[in-house]
Image (cartoon, rainbow, N blue to C red; front, side, top):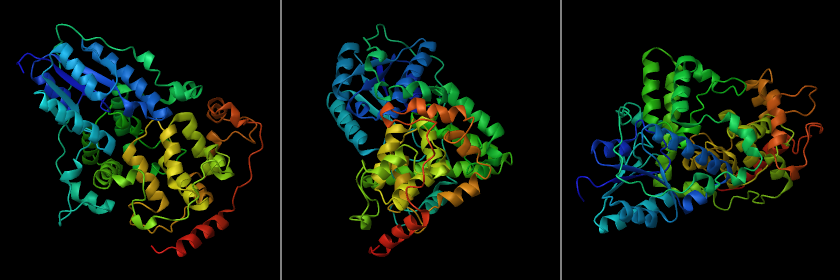
Amino acid sequence: MSDTSPILVWFRRDLRLTDHPALYAAAQTGRPVIPVFIHDDLVEGLAAAPKWRLGLGIGCFADALRDKSSQLVLRKGDALEVLQELITQTGAGSVYWSRLYDPETTARDRRVKDALKNQGVEARSFGGHLMFEPWTVETKTGGYYKVYTPFWNSVKNRAVDAPLAAPATLTTPAQWPDSDDLADWNLGAAMRRGADVVRPFVQLGEKAAQSRLGAFMAHGVAEYKANRDLPGVDGTSNLSENLSLGEISPHQCWHAGQRALHDGKKGAETFLKELVWREFAYHLMHHTPRLLDQNWREEWAGFPWNEDERCAEVKAWKQGRTGEPFVDAAMRELYVTGRMHNRGRMIVASYLTKHLMCHWRIGQKWFEDCLIDWDPASNAMGWQWAAGSGPDATPYFRVFNPATQLDKFDKNRDYTSRWIAEGRAKAHPDALAFFEAIPKHWNMSPDDDYPDRIIALDAGRLRALDAYKNRNF
């Protein structure tokens, strides 16, 4: 490796210039930097909304690099083979990237790192997607944390690295390698007509993410503790969309939250706790990868959930036609915006897994298909937490009542009136947009009657409790 050989910076879910340790380290060497994004099998395996949102993010990030007189090289194929081909074509002596933590990605990255090192190529991975590497947080006995509150207490006073500045300049190579055309990848194909409906709700790229953070710290964080539970109020940061693709770093969010807390904005501590909840999800995914596709609490194996994804109850749940306004509003918000309010996520997940007694994997898979802020660790932990099979200090037999939850958190029905059109003389435009986004074969219209409940809430709750009682937990 010569001192002037290029460095390939392999971008994945880290589409930003600011506070990017791998990019910063590459720029500091003064050597030519070649940013690369690879469409491999893991990208191909993404579901509809996450893949579409990734495509938008890649395009926006490519524009940001052009503003730095650089460019993003796009290639499709096996990651190792693509990198080896680029090394041959450019004479690159190093490959840098940001770590990710799901099992498939870590296995791929390990294979890439080992192969490149055996070829004499420097291969370095950096942090940046998390504030605390999962293996650095341990209990007093040296194990991993299984409950959130002790995890929070362990990390809340830890030093978090200050965000790094974006590189002032990026040295360019003498000649750029060929690049695919992003349009040819057609990453939004599975969204079909829903893409035009969801697109206005996307806050795309690093600049938008930083603006979103700044606006929330200025106007929202002080009342965050109370407002975060009110789905009819714009009381959350909405940063999950940008964090999922690394358009902003958790370090930037943490330090902004700490400044707000220092300024006396009391809701900032709750915001910091939510950032650490994301860290906890990754901590568990790293130590117990079964979180992603098996019951985290192994004693739940064999629990008699309904696993039929095509049954009438699941269909009604997906279509927002359960007859429970809170559930249906949240499911329609998901389809129109690609996101769902956190209180709504808890309600729809509890309803599916407890009132309807359907397997949490059905809901996890549907969210994976529909969420533009999809995150493997947070999605899996959220579903298992709601189902009772996951990490939660609260007893598994808690069953949210969507009717009383609606009275508590949407008293004036601001949320449900925004998202449910049936029975309204003048429906909200967002409620009508749902019918523009859904598949035509659902054969739904805003002129339909609003459906009756598919199950009585008391009956559903008692059925769930009876099933729990007959299991040996």
